[in-house]
Image 1: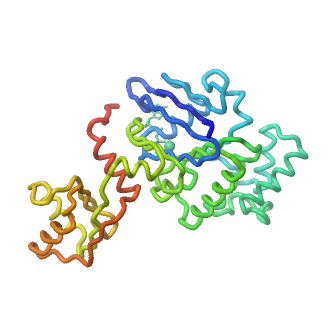
Image 2 (image 1 turned 135 degrees about the vertical axis):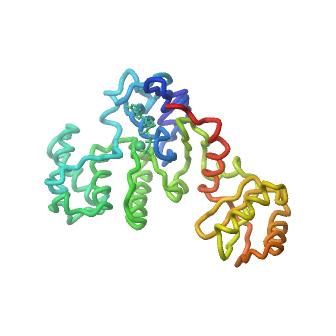
Image 3 (image 1 turned 120 degrees about the vertical axis):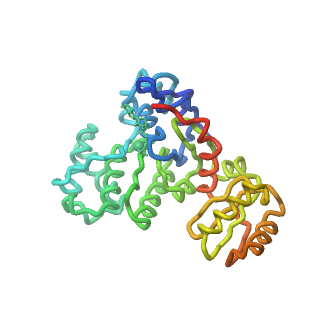
Length: 319
Ligand SMILES: Nc1ncnc2c1ncn2[C@@H]1O[C@H](COP(=O)(O)OP(=O)(O)OP(=O)(O)O)[C@@H](O)[C@H]1O
Ligand SMILES: [Mg+2]
């Protein structure tokens, strides 16, 4: 598969603060590439450099064979962007918003009307064309913002936390739209901090404090981070059980790398093949009630937390 985006040693400094620290990755044609990271990790800064909106301090970005640093304008008609704080005109109707942005892209009137109809259909907004944008719920507004970003049939779209703050059903519906787009060979670069969304990406990059700490398909990232399955416990009192196990790990009574709370479960990360037996024995001895224990495959959230812990101390930077 061709690389549609190639990023090499990309760096951005604001004064002496490094927001993006020599990251390298590529994005293949027709894939959904997820760019995952906590608040302030450098996601938006990276996207803005990839779009030619912000000058990198160092490094190279090539999008669709074009060096972004020198020829960003040549890319404009071939890429779409839904920014984190996307702007729709609230007092205009859905169709008027699409008309406005379509004209701004320079689409000829007849082409534009056809594209607006297609976009309304694609985004499931048929019948909503004459509704005032301010009357749309958050999920529908996000669909409209995606519609605006794809109106000119771009080959690559950049979406910066497109589903932040909308309910799970609307998020799922939005992702269905992204799947439809990739079926048409559109390449999607999407930032998120929702772990379930990350599982839906073909490949991922994890960014933390401006550094890319994991990169690859979700399965590859999991395999590289943990070679062993994770022990999942369902204690009567998860917090108490987690603390007790953590203390046992610190004292060496239980051999494990990490213990984390996961909703009402506790996850124990260990390469010890007897971990389940040992933990059960420990729980019994200390009269900690557990409904059940199971060995499970690690989730991406497990992997992310483990990567953050592994890298956290060494990459903390002073602003
Ligand atoms: N123009 C700027 N001047 C100084 N610092 C900046 C500037 N833009 C971003 N930063 C800093 O760079 C870091 C990365 O910011 P960025 O917006 O890229 O993070 P993000 O991963 O998109 O976060 P979020 O999930 O909150 O959107 C932050 O510490 C931010 O404060
Ligand atoms: Mg951001």
